[in-house]
Amino acid sequence: MPETVDETVRASGPADVPTSVTVTPAAVPVPDADSRPFWEAAAEGRLVLQRCGACGRLRFPPAPVCSHCGSWDTTWDEVDGHGEVYSWVVVHHAVTPALRGEVPYAVALVELAPGVRIPGRLTGVDHDAIAAGMPVRLVFHPVEGPWPVVGFVPAAGTDGAGDGDGSPA
Image (cartoon, rainbow, N blue to C red):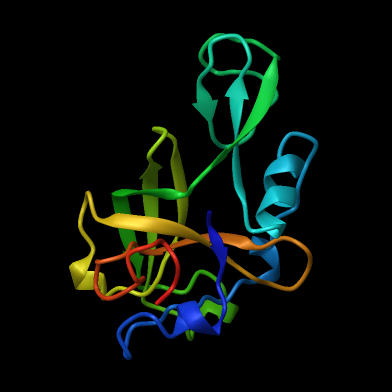
């Protein structure tokens, strides 16, 4: 299952590559009726995704209605948080004063094994080493308040992060 980032994960990447994040107050999650189960599970270190009760498709972000078939019938499935980088960007300009010390940083769109794409900060890897198809695993970055922020780190065997069993090195 996805893990909450702690000192162990922060220390798992190369020494000169940041593995923790700063989150501005504007970026702190604010759950609504549709996303609350996602954030409650995230606070427990679990990743859950909505599944349409009619057509069976998983979806993210959480929404009241399936974008494929229009059904309001929704269940929640726990998934393991492993996936591959689908796309990424390296941010060089701080969009808020609180992020000045963070640039440059990478944001990745990750395709999880069930076929759902989720964005998040990608830490623990040199920006020049990021590539489409790179295996990653989801982590939750703790921030002030009850809800962690979604992020990703290289999966086991990728740039020394992890020890092969999905846990931090």
